[in-house]
Length: 223
Image (tube, rainbow, N blue to C red; front, top):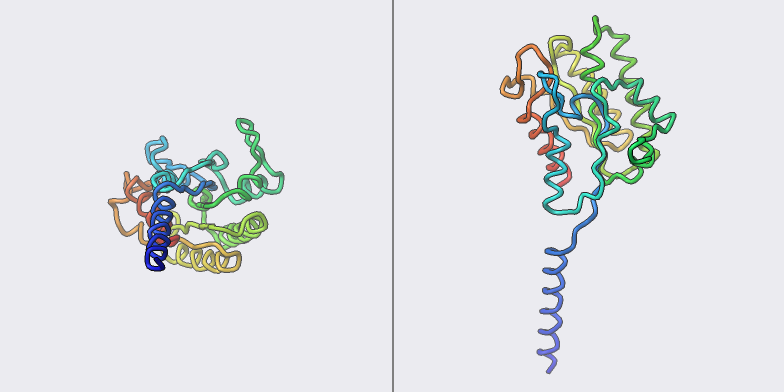
C-alpha cells in the first residue's frame, strides 16, 4: 500500500511538472531604448528587423510577450536627448506610458546608444567622447533606480569616424559603467571585422545578420 502511495505521489509530481512546463508562460515585458541601431535602421533609410525584434520573437515562442515597447527609441537619439526623456519622464501619447513606468515594468531592457551620436560629429575629439561617456553613466544610474533586473547595454564598433582605438577605449569604459550599475555588457566590437554584417561598405548601419547575432548574444547571456 505504501509503495502505491509513493508511486502515486511521484506520478502526480511528474504530471504537475509537465503541465507547468507546457502550459505555464511567464509574462514578458521588453523595453528598448536607443538610436537607429535599436530600431533596425538600415543604410537605405528604412527600418529593418532589429535585434530587439529577434529578441521579442524568441520569447514569444516560450512566453507571453505582454508588452514590447520600442517607441522610446529614436533614430537620432543621443545621450543628451535620452537624459532629457528620463529627467522629464517623457510619456508616449499613444499609450500614455511614461518612460520610467516602462523601465520599472521591464523584464528585459536593452539600450544601444552612441553610434548615431559619435558618427554624426565632424570630429570625434576626446572631449566629445568623454561627454558621451559621462552622459551614459548618468543614464545607467537613472535606469538602475527604476529597474535592477535584466539590463543590457550594447557596445559600439569601429567605423570610418570611430577608430579601433577609440572604440576599444569607449567599450572598456562602458564595461565599467555596466558593472557599476548591474547591466550586462554586450560586446559587438568584432562586427566591424565582417563585411557580411553591413549593407554598404561606407555606412555604419548593420544588417539583419548582425542584429540576429546581437540578439543571440543577449539570449546566451540570459541562459
